[in-house]
View (cartoon, rainbow, N blue to C red):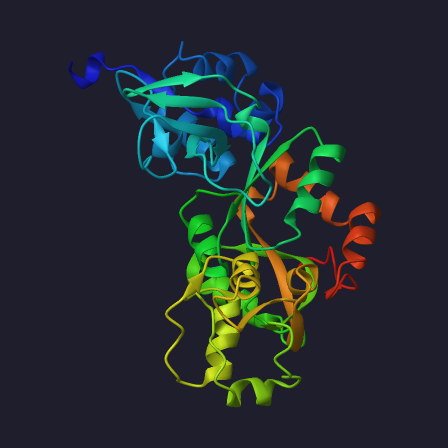
Length: 349
C-alpha cells in the first residue's frame, strides 16, 4: 500500500473529549468551521496544512501526535504485558488510548476493561477511558482520595503504586495524568519542584495533598526510643528502592553505609516485613506503622504533592481531582489520619 492509499487517522476526538470541549467549542478555538471539524474528526476530510497546524496549536501538541497514516489504529500498551492472557485497563492520556496490564493496586481488586489473548483484544469495558484518571503514587491513604473521587465526580481513578521518581518518570513519558512525590521536607517544599523540573523538563503545577510524618518503623519490644539508639543498634533493616522518599531518608540516616539488601516496594511492604519478623526496622510514614501496631520514631515532616503537567491542566478529570483534594469531606478524613497535616492541603504552587 502506497502512502497515497493509506488512510489518515486522527486523535481529535480523544484530545477534544479529554478537555471536555464540544466540536463547536473546538471550531471556535481553532478558527475553523464546525462542519469542517466534524468532517476531519470523522475522517471524511483530509485537513489542510493550516487546519492541521491550527488544531495542533489549540491542543498544545505536535501535528504527528494528532494525525498519522496507517492501515489500522495501533494498539498502544503503556508497557508490554508480561504474559498472556492479560487483563487490562483502558485510559486516554494525551489523546492516546492506552492499555495498562492489570497489576496489584493500592485500591484493591479493580474491574478490568478487557483481556488480551492470542494476540487479540477482547474488550469488555467497565469504564469509559475518556473518564478514567491514572495516577502514580505511593500514598498509603490514596484509597480515601479514590473513594471521594468516585463519589463526587463522574470519573474513575486508577492508581499505580510507584515511588516518587518512578511516578515522575511515568508522567514524563505520558503514561499517567498525575504523579505523587514526597522528596522534600515540609519546611523546604521547593525540593519537590526541583526534582519534578529535573525529570519532566516541561511546565507543571504542584498540588499539596498533605504534609506527613516519615520516620522509623520498629518491631515492638526493642527498647529503642530515639533515632540515635536505632542507628547504634545491630537491628536488621528493610530497605526501599532508589528514587523513593523513604530511601532518601534512609540514605541520609545511614550516611554512606551500604543500603539493606532486603527491599520493600512501598510503605506497607516495609511494615509487613517488620511485622513478619524479617526485619527490625525500616522507613515508612507514621500511618501504616500505627495501623500495624508497630513502634514509630518520627524523623521529619514531608510535603506530599501531586504533580500535574501544564498540558493536563484543562483536562476535566484533572480539574475534578483538584476539586476533590480541596473538598471539606476529604480534608476531614485526612485530618484524622495519624501523622497527616492538612493545613496546606489543596494549595497550588
